[in-house]
Amino acid sequence: EDKVVQSPLSLVVHEGDTVTLNCSYEVTNFRSLLWYKQEKKAPTFLFMLTSSGIEKKSGRLSSILDKKELSSILNITATQTGDSAIYLCAVYNPWYMNYGGSQGNLIFGKGTKLSVKP
Amino acid sequence: DSGVTQTPKHLITATGQRVTLRCSPRSGDLSVYWYQQSLDQGLQFLIHYYNGEERAKGNILERFSAQQFPDLHSELNLSSLELGDSALYFCASSVGTQASGEETQYFGPGTRLLVL
Image (cartoon, rainbow over the protein chains, first blue to last red):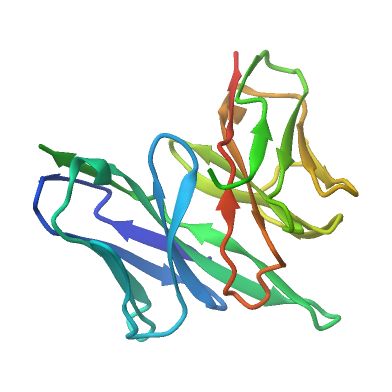
């Protein structure tokens, strides 16, 4: 069964700390891994990773994929209270139709709930 | 604001009833995906439509159905509702079918369904 597992499930840190969130996956056909941040409402896109070893950065957030270890990490440096959210990891798992087309769906992990205390 | 709209924002109904949730994708996006998010199950993929055609099904119950209309908006129909159907229902949209695996899905604000 295809699955995505995130750890830890929850994390409490203080402002200024650096955190590392983990995501591991077992899927039939891996194409890409995505990170989303979910605050009170809809998930918002952070990163998409397709190649191993290439770090993607956006401000204090960065992420990297390790296809050999079937995993990814999301780092947040100098955390702020505004970083408090659930961080979701999803893997795109395509399959191929008989007529030659392909499609797939995102398989989500259960998320890591990050709480940043002032 | 992702550009994806969903109505209604909240819905309270009783067991056995039927409801319809509506989603309008971002301008130019041809794909609509429906997800259910509950406390214990996390985000679960339900169904995907591309340009009016059903393309993939996930963990969608037989009591649930969806369609995508010519103007590309989509509706998710939930019938014979049970207490366990209470959840947040999100739709997301993307430009294509994600065949390349390199497209981002943009999520709407969700519809919170409460079945009493």
